[in-house]
Length: 270
Image (cartoon, rainbow, N blue to C red; front, side):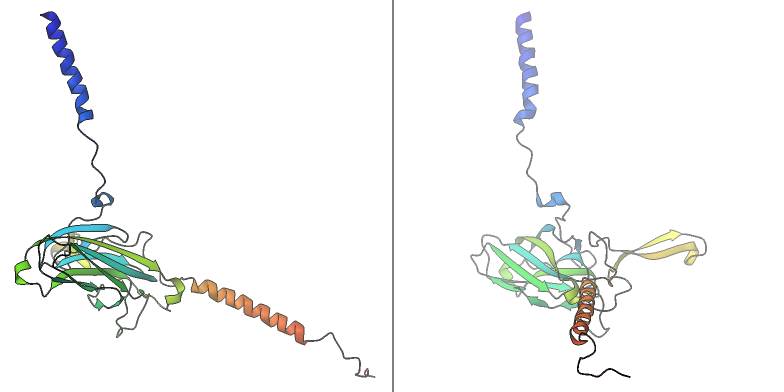
């Protein structure tokens, strides 16, 4: 009897020790492991904030407006890529991405498929929009892209009634190419176009009504190395190199044209 009880205890201990090993391997990394959002906003104010290089995901319904926002600095040329995963059965659908700057002005795409139609048997749809290079400064009347927050809106247009509300999955990613001094301009913005998304209030004597100080809470997204000052670019390097080459060319030209001294055929002066 005592032997049977000891054997049962040993079997139980072995089972407890083997349980963690039998639990299976750890789950694989998901797109959200790098901090990318897994939901999209439904308006400009609730747009999901993503950093450049992150791949954000979101589930939604056909007919919804899905919004993301990202930072873009001077000298960058952003490329917005979106993937829409469609259900097994659907009608032909046309999807569109629109990009807006911090002033909510729609920015035209230089190139890319910002509008695409998926056939009835298509399982996915890919869209892309390459923006113009972000400028450090612009005239007030111009529609140039400026440093700050940019918004991406993804939606289906002219959707058939039978497809309204069908579930879809989306992926969104933004990358940029650094153009540098080729797109540099003289001047810079005082502040990037980063909108206030909320209002905070703090109690301090003499500030605001009833001693409250109210201020805008700015969007938290910005480039990893911070916003550029707007005045420095590699154009200054090329300007300096050009100045040095011009000086050397002037010295060389003078050395070639000044001659070796007084010509021998000229009589000496008395």
